[in-house]
Length: 262
Image (tube, rainbow, N blue to C red):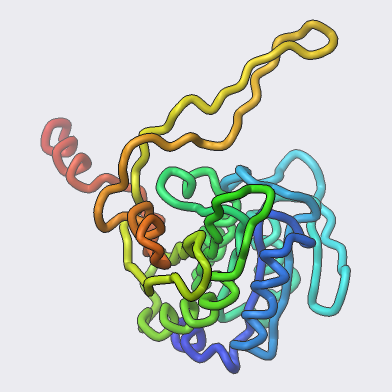
């Protein structure tokens, strides 16, 4: 599987996202994928699922509807989409690579734990399929430019596929494009997951019936970015590439705990 993932011109590619089947980022990613493969499939949420993280729908049935040639929408989460695609729709010929995105907004630092875009790549990884999550940072939420993703996504995918030989076990790659014009992009940066000091992003109010509500808004980062992190890469106008491993075990703590308890 790892070998076919590095030969994308003959491999099947599955695309998903968390912004929904009609999002501009997934249409961009489909154009990019067709530069790399002649066999591209799209399975994406019917509606936006931002912040869905790695959630799975288990309390109701799911519907997968064909909306075009090799293009399907699911009334569920990004995780649901990838699961249905791998275990049902494409089970006779699994994809060589799963691409998730391009998300409208960066998925860096703590964002990775909430992101449905990242979760789609995570789900593919759990099934042993190479995966890359791609996101476009922005300065203006109402006017997101995908120009740097459009210009560099294909190259980023090719470079990762060429470098990941064999594809590392239990690992996917998280790619973020900076919010600058393509001509101002300063290359690629292999970066660690950053960490921000988050500000208060809760709004509180009273609805017309007099009931109090709370609304979780976008993160308000405070403080600087650590050198070598994805945050710093985007600040410097670089495309961040972060290898993400699914084994969450804290090995040093486990070893210390074993010595204390066993």
